[in-house]
Image (cartoon, rainbow, N blue to C red; front, top):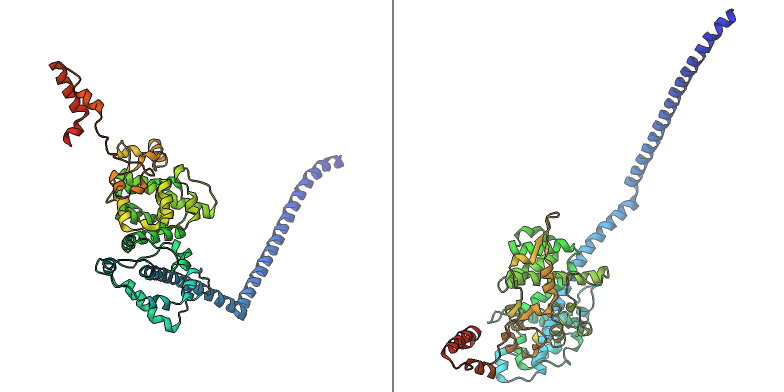
Length: 449
């Protein structure tokens, strides 16, 4: 009996002792793990302290740091020298182009007087050819601009002549990029007539816009197309003030704002500004996409704005690529006589974009994103080359472009024999009155002439 009474007690005490043992063992394992963790932390901290001491005492690391600082300074200095070399390159090319014109082009005495005193031919030969080679080559990180001592006076005189404005308000003119590739053939290349030379002297605005677009294509960044369209629509309808930060960050918007405020807004309506700014922004973006990502074509640009073979074969001004008409661009790519402020002003003042609807019909608002986008009807008009027109006065001044550009206000034809017969077709008085009223409605334009 006693053995039977002790057995249930032993069976009850045995699991209690095992649970205590497990808890004690668990506490012991936790203490060991904490000790190991503290030991690892102490060792890691000690290694970090040793590394810091080694870095502070190691002379090689300080040398590397100084070399990296010197490298950053050299890169900044190289960028400054690069900009200066590009400016000097433009000045030298402009000098060579201007100095070569009086030598090769026969002109009358009146033309010579209008152009001002012609420079001495010896001055042109005094320019060292090495300057042209150094200006045409791409400056490297270690490139410097070396000018011989005996040539400094001549170059300074040329720069002073360019910097001093003449009586007509002309300032420094910058050559187009095509002169960089053709600089070696300045002396031997045929020059335009004397009248073209006279007009070419007044290309200050053309050269300025050209330099602005060239700098924009090399310094701007890619952006989202939907956001680009919203910025253009809001800038045309509300102004550029709200996008001052975007203009400061991206060179593309800075260029478009300057072109719009100086040249587009005074001459164009909001619809024409919207169409031109859209084409300009997407053209600049398309060139950057082809250079960086190799993207084929933009969805907004019309198909007829693709580059013609002449644009790829002949060096030309970047402004020629901004026009939408293929024949127009091809003629400007080959004939450089049109690179004048007079021609640029004519294209700005006589261009018309045909849009019979209100300006608000040209864009829609996406309520989900809060961004504006071009309406399908306006995009269809941009895809139609017949909507991109010139005034008929433009073709009276430049008849070579007839057939290349649609006419916005074509001259009406002269009244035909059918018109005369229709005026005298009735014999009764009542019918005659009706005919006269109909003639006034249909041919009122001719009565006013």
